[in-house]
Image (cartoon, rainbow, N blue to C red; front, top):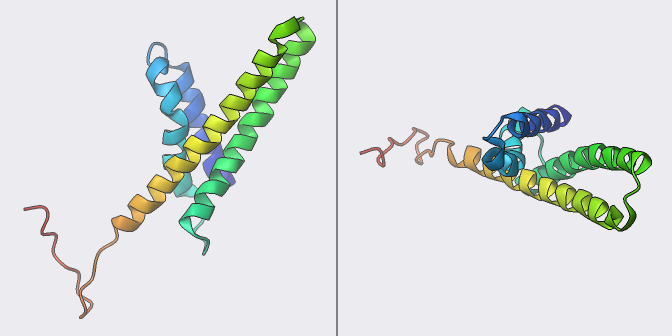
Length: 133
């Protein structure tokens, strides 16, 4: 699952660095990262909800570490005065948003993968796809 978290973080960074597109891509990047990153997680017997929440907490923790380190460096280099609460409030909002959206993306990916499994009829043969027309 750690590999998937780093994949999701990479997707978030790439979406942030693309000029002009980052206004749209950056807010959606935790969801996209969760959707794509959970696919590299090992298959385990835990429920989809537990896997998605674990993925969200891991990515949120990684973002918390990065954002808190950057905020601490800013505090050392600059006197923020009353904007100190704004800085740490932004860190908290970023971490909560990242954790929740990546968990939602991971859950959506896991549920979609389950719905794509073939439905079998009682004699074990796969049913033809009648929705395709």
